[in-house]
Length: 544
Image (cartoon, rainbow, N blue to C red; front, side, top):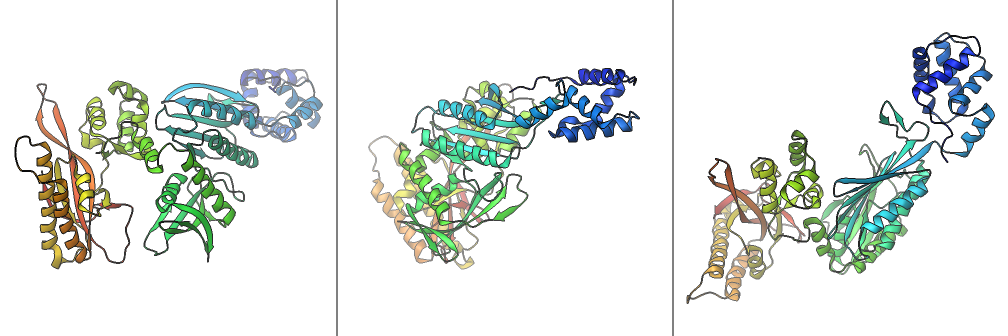
């Protein structure tokens, strides 16, 4: 229900001047406005406190009124005929309204104001469900929040990305000095709203996973869950910041049940088991708090994963890849530094949506770099050209790339398909006595991979080695490394070279797909899902 009167600062000052004039007290409009600013009536919904604030401000300005007159004046300033009517109205309505904004592909599509958080959440859910096209559409819906705002950022595999936000605002003073006056949510209402958003989206659109969807029943609703997972051998420990990472780990071990194990809960899978503990971090990141991770809560997390996995049209990994890299996923990618990109856009007073239009790609192809970082060479070159930069000005400064442990020669051949240049590194754990032998073996790997690449592109009646023969030769190298307690990691990267300038003197860049091989010591670790290649290793050589 709308307030019966929404007066500006000028009309409020006029009401004050006229009220005092009726009591033979003279006051100019400027002084009246300063008194009202000092009273800051809309800092509270308690009508009696408003009266006390106004009386204090009047006294400071040497204006004395009886308390009953101040109460009556507060009522008139709020648009009510009498104090009693104002008092009744103040008990019937909260001090908040809820502002819902919709942004699709970086462009604001509209907004609405609701009188209750329940109505605002209903409107948000209607829009979210409409914008996720099918029940099985893979989507990540990140549920961000602080004490005054709820934001649902939705990234999809095959549809426009969008963001829906609810902001709690002061009902009586939606704007002050041209700025929105936000106000905290009621914690119980916010907790209920977050759970309602999570449950309704995951029920109506089972292919959508709500990230940061865990809400503490005992702590404030603005705390996020963080998990620490340890496998049974103790060789793998990971801090998991949201359900996206957590459910990837569940999928990797084929998790099917939860057990109580000593001081932790254990997620049990066919391939491995993971002991889990949980802490809560507040949305500002200023503190973390422990809270018992109950078996019931762990079961709920597992059931959310199982429902999501069943709803997907393909595997969990393929859903992740489709959202992270888009429908036209490329086999070779490079890490982009989104903060660098944002800084360049700010310098040019340009938005992500404008950059996307300038290079002819969907907004989401650029915006996904914020979370997933990986871009193909064409996107990097187009962004660099539009911003008049070299590609390296947009890339993440890193000494390594994502690498996968190589099981056999066939796997290495598949990883190398499309490589145009090669590099090699030795992990710091490799003993100096083995260094020369390792360099030789790495070069042997590269030699065989170059032979395979040459055979793949050469025409004519020449003798070619079969893929089985090439894989067998690589298997021999891998076996030699294993006998020395070593293992091989391969990672893909893109390197940009600048071979020439165009007629206008502008530098032209060519991307080269680079396969980076690394050798490390097996020691006491078990197989990892992935390792950084080249993070702290010693160069063993490079070959184009």
